[in-house]
Length: 293
Length: 265
Image (cartoon, rainbow over all chains, first blue to last red):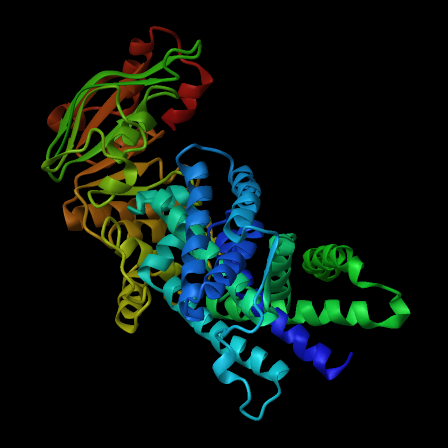
């Protein structure tokens, strides 16, 4: 694997670190399997791309993308909480609807972001190569997001969200409005994923309606790899695990695809992903099995 | 003070499985009274507690706790007034969270939860002190997950949690039923101590007639969703378990079955 390919893998891993943090909030904190993210990731990208092309400040464009993501999350939460649709199904309904919404937003299947300023433009040309600037910029943003999520989950309000996912009956007995926690948590989760989409569009120079396929699996892969490597006992460790898990996942994929001996090609990506995630899921079980026997 | 006025509860209304769980229950419990509730399975004991906690909304009648009408309030909205300990040790706390995190949750029961750190230095100290009072050595395990504790330890911590924030009424739903006899006794003694020290208005559902008479200062018996016995003061002091079983038999109008022998213990 070349140096550029490695930096590229790290860059993509950091983009998906935002997805991983969002997936962690939904899956781990709220115990809410939320597939909306397959639609919110391209939604974030689409909103950002269209706004930037219309001359809007790229930071503002990313903020609006987050808002759009949060709204999509609220739709899923409403379907689940208000209309009692099973959480998984509610999220699939929103996801499928978002495909059409994303096409509407862009007016066509993809939008290129060429020769326009992005969030990264001011940081280019400071002596560092562009392919190094991007991951560094993303790393700073990812750390900021991680700290915000961490601090929130350690607060009284965040603890209420964690209790909602862990034991909702107990949470209600403690005066926590669990419905409101689900609205808030799923909105927050999808805002993070949309931010990932917005950054994807700005670092890669395009938004594409199909870029969301498998977002949930990638996010989940990052969360699980993080848990396998670092454990999940403490919130901060688990969150750092999400970010590093996302990077490790991308490097593993890159290695698998670029090693000639395996004979894999780019179109095998989804298969490799599925195998990798399965492996990460089974690994802790195997470890335990070995220990107990 | 608690007062229920002509409370009716129906489950599965309009279906073939429709069941009247409470039919016209009226009950007033004075401030600071410790009332025990007995009755056979399906008598309406848990429903009565559910009506007070907010898990069950009556179809008719009104429920007042303290100075407020809470008849239609959902559980979370009245949690500031109601502290509870559940029968299932797993139900009243979060197994995935640590002891101190569970206490932090209980510390804010029924209050607004803001962005302050849930486990500040001063709160940690307070929680540790409260847990140390149990004398179970748990103060050295504050960061352990609740799931690592035994059922009895969890119930003891649940009682501490119930006392972290103020309440108008403490509801105990057979909270020693799932424990071994030694631990059950420990938790009951602890309950008595806490209720006495805080002069709490308490409702305790129990399966054990012995417990029902040994603790508290008033006993009510439910049957078929109605209150069939309500004793306090001297009348209650002169009762023993035999008498209770007798009354049990009379209200049921049939001979004792195994179930009733079991609960007499």
